[in-house]
Image 1: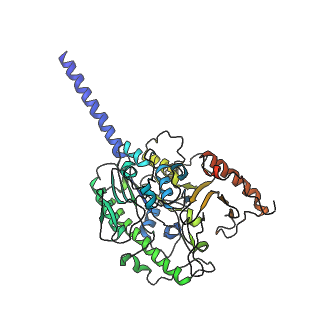
Image 2: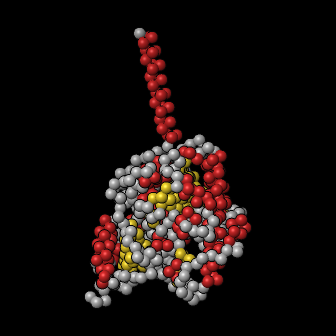
Image 3: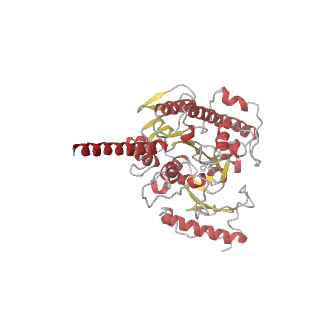
Length: 478
């Protein structure tokens, strides 16, 4: 009897050990995830997207070794609301963040609501060790801190801005003045943390402040390649060629500073033998204009014509809403593949869960879709036909913009105003040079897009519907 009991006990121990081993193996085989978000980086600034003057060998390498999305968009073409959507899969109007957060607003209690679930929280609950290195800009009161939103570790810029050199950085919960180029300091910390947790399953967010203004000063190794460059600039009447070309040179230098540090990351992954089990996702929070359409910066751009800057030109131009999106997933995603399906950074929450193989929480307000099947070479059923975006601008201007975009058409509705709505035939006018909103021949397309836009606004309980009850702006001849 005793022998039977002893044998049973041994079998129980062995079985438990096997189960624990299998569980541990399952945990370790989940991929590490590194998400890189740059600030104000246009899709057009990258070699892999066709730029022959910018120098981005490491971004291009990611595209060669992974997948390049050709139709990736942001939820809002300015910083804070776009980053909030990236982390939560929710629209800015649902989160109370519709424009970039000023320091005064942050002091007054504006930030990412603590009760809203982020994908770093979901990964942490599923065994991931998490860190954010770099820019936050989603509230700086204690209850908005990144460590309250799923990150085990934070090092970086808690507010919206920092200098390109010798920045003020939060380190171990305290503000410190550090010496050196901000992108280098950011990557050094990311590599230090990654080396520390290399034996764990980790999710690392690296949020560069670059190439945000001010672009420099940048190290000589970043500015030197463009010193004698005569850059191609937009052909737009009224631009100051000298100023525009110099701005391109400085912008490219800032982009290069990111790329150079991206090279350090890829080398460290190889050195630590982590590359084969690490997904690297590279994107930007929104796009950028330097002279395109006669404007400068993003969705809250200003006119830069006749040697002057201003006033505001709120916009949803392609340059503002398109973002680079490159994903390297060794052993899964075919190297050098191109994905043309329309995706948005509001899809990031669902897609990160899909990449990690974890089940997202049952949240009926989760707005994004999982694009990870595309990276596996699969075709999701009934993928979306249109992209939506929103932006309520209230800093140095006022605009309530909502956008719906298909492969062929784009409608930008300027609510609570008249005479500013826009309709573009993207198939025949990809540069968005002719507004067809009041064109009788385009009315069917306009009305179809408006119906889709209204249905979407209703589906997210958009507050704009209570401010602007008009279904559509009448044409001058109506």
